[in-house]
Length: 139
Image 1 (cartoon, rainbow, N blue to C red):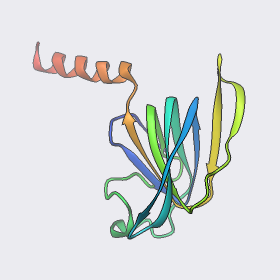
Image 2 (image 1 turned 120 degrees about the horizontal axis):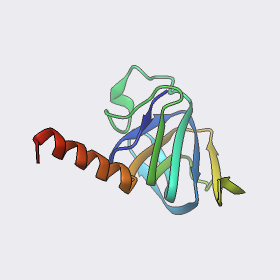
Image 3 (image 1 turned 45 degrees about the vertical axis):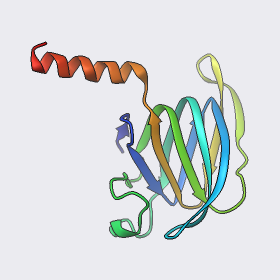
């Protein structure tokens, strides 16, 4: 049950919940280890949370990315997240007004294999990390 904010942090699961203010369908692709996947891009304050772990969690060779987080409750939070789920049909999402205090949002639940990766972190977190590095170096 950890939260991740850095670029290229990723999660893999049997089922996930995705939230964003904007979800955009990208394409259907085929991967050797996974099969057909439908890809999406989220924008404007996105998050992805694992709701069901992979059955072969201990076998890292079968996963899309060896560095993915796979524990139940692991969560990605970022400005933009790309994700894919196995299958060939687009998923339906629900729209909720006032989901993030003042703005509405789109919710999506997957029930098949899901891979999500941070493509653009929050800018304020990236600047805070840079400031911390500068202080440690004495600049």
